Length: 130
Image (tube, rainbow, N blue to C red; front, top):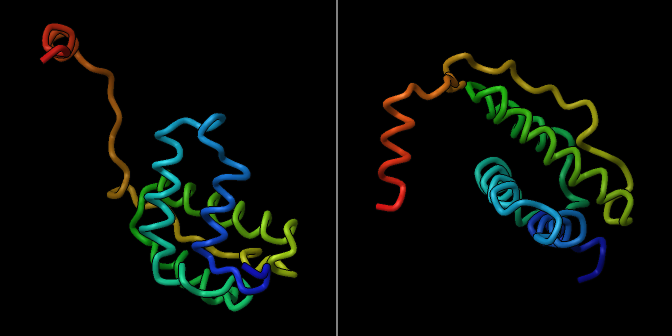
């Protein structure tokens, strides 16, 4: 594929192989990248990288409204890494992801975290093999 013709999806697959190889990145981390990509960037994944503009990415950032802090952070990180590395690889000439404004995290979108209580630990320990 000619570098200027590469789509976001093609670049995402190449980016994962180059910068996030399975030998160095945990399986769950790779799955999280895929989930974030397929959830948020699906609408522009077939577009050529050179045709993606700041407004496209701002739209995607805006659509993350109501997501948890973690979800928004993962989206921000993925977009930033994809477009920064695309510049380094001469796929695009400017970082259209620069200056994106992301929504505030939603408290409702965040799941509460807590420690397991003794009976939950015992239940897991006594039944993990089932």
